[in-house]
Amino acid sequence: MQTCWIVYNGSLTDEKFIDQALLLQEAANKQEIQATLVKNYELLMDVQHGLHEKPDFVVFLDKDILLAKFLKNEGIPVFNDPDVIEICDNKARQYMALANAHIPMPRTIIAPKVYANFTIQHTGFYEQVLQTIHLPMIIKEAHGSFGMKVYLIETKKQFFDKVEELNGKEYVFQEYIESSRGRDIRVNVVGGQVVACMYRHSETDFRANITNGGTASPIILTERQKEVAILAAQVLNAEFAGVDLLFGEDEEPLVCEVNGVAHIRNLYNVTGINVGDAMISYILSKVGAVVI
Ligand SMILES: Nc1ncnc2c1ncn2[C@@H]1O[C@H](COP(=O)(O)OP(=O)(O)OP(=O)(O)O)[C@@H](O)[C@H]1O
Ligand SMILES: [Mg+2]
Image 1 (cartoon, rainbow, N blue to C red):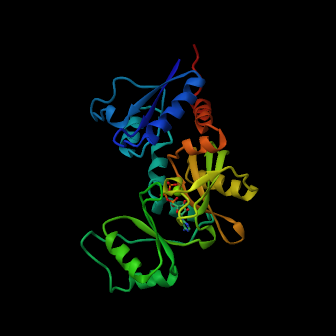
Image 2: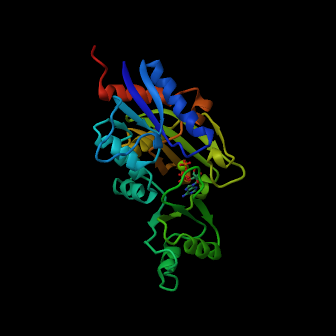
Image 3: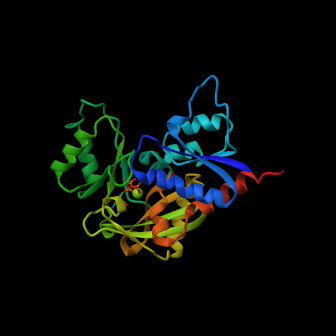
């Protein structure tokens, strides 16, 4: 019997993280894989001595990129690949890659590095940003999930307060897609195929994330929405991807972001599809079945 580890973050106490791991475990068990849930800190990254015990593969449900790289370095196939998790975990880096491939997305400017406790106000830099991307705009930290590090900036005061607050952090300035206010689509792509999707909608917040009070419902994608989601995943080499699409003018899809470690519980609740099934099938097609 093949074995796998489903690695998640043991420091996050919200039950959605363990729940996510359980969905994957259920999918693996269905395909006769012996799947063990492993908290990231349960694997000792003993750099000289390595691991004593190794599974046939790892499904990595966390952003502990060093651990993902350590496991790969131990010769274990890790899904998603640690490099993919890393690039997706940095929105500035992923936007550069998406823009290089001409993926439709909101106009985006990456903030320069400003050290904490220093400032570049009065240099004219921010005025240039304000002239290029007008208010209201989005400011988005490079690392963040559940919409928690995404800000709608409507006034100059909010803008200057936020940029000062973010000194020392990586973030981007982004065009606000007003036509998508409070709504987006989450598309889950596995191995270049759309496996499940949902429409997310909020009446109370510009962000559609369910964690922010949004509600999810089923949706049938247009061919263009499918195409853009698949292309975005492909550009980032993301074998598994949760692609968020915004609605541009005339409803044309714009990529909001690509998640390299996408949550699958809400999709399961809305569509009845356990994306884990497709993830495990895909991994088995890559690592091969056991020959007894
Ligand atoms: N440029 C934009 N214009 C309009 N709305 C946006 C824009 N960027 C983000 N949003 C809204 O904010 C939400 C959160 O943004 P984003 O998906 O980039 O951040 P996140 O915190 O990484 O989310 P996730 O929980 O999906 O990882 C989006 O789902 C969307 O509704
Ligand atoms: Mg998102």
